[in-house]
Image (cartoon, rainbow, N blue to C red; front, side, top):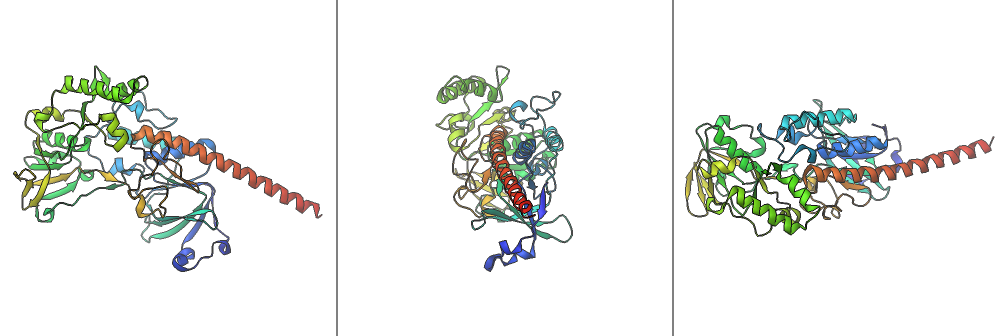
Length: 431
């Protein structure tokens, strides 16, 4: 990474709340700072590397793709075919299956980082990032925990890429009485396998892809899961007529309007899966693709959970009213005796906790402008991984971000060379 220690203290002399500036090691970055070493950050890094632009990548965890490595269950596979999940300029190995396992995907990402010589600064947590309007630069303050003595660093840069994504932090809704439950409670990000739940009655809160798959995994390990379905949900077969449902939808959208593609998908879903309302699964009024585009809600692609629901091995229950010791009271008045609770309640952005900016990002930490216009803000601020369109959406934004930064960087570098050359000529003329 092309970075040199800052040696112009007078330029950045500050007072007041920023008096700690000189207590930190200051590093000038001759290029962008990328926050996050997940798929989004790696995709931006590869694009910049191809354009010859130096950068610094900061990652709070001790590895790339920490969500995939540390916060996913063992049986996880990609839910859509690999060709829709590959990052720019680096296809999956041909011998990988159509739906790679999480371990294969992690291996792919590590190979990606190695191929493009991307070396993140691990164990470095961003405390704050703020734009200094006086000097037209970003100031990114971090704490490094890679050694026994935490050290503070401040990076100074022209461009800042937020690549922490939509799923940086687990979302934990509040439930009345949960503190009195007394049994084991965990978020799905900490769930690995149903092996330790053998014979237990487990309440799974949430019916997205994670909730469905955790419930299925519990069944396969002889637990008795009840899955909370609080609102309507689209469940689609993973494949239609031997082809990926996602691939089929993408193909149809090239020729047909969105509403018509939704109608066709729902017709196939009814023919293949049947009427799901009698099992407690009602469909939303909006079609699956329209709902995804407008609200970011991903349809569930069934990989076996429906069969368990039909057989009664997975019990579908309505919302939770309150918890008590060893029990959950549902909104319909039913009382469930349970041993454990798994919260498959999703994730959220952590951007508001560290980015001191309120024009580009909303209070929820998502760019205010929707895809495909949510990747570029003002003053050299960029975002990747917030499209609600998975890895393919992140890749598209990463390509745009890398190209845009490279263009600005090359123009500025060229201007600096012209300025230096002019100064050199003036010096020579004095001799």
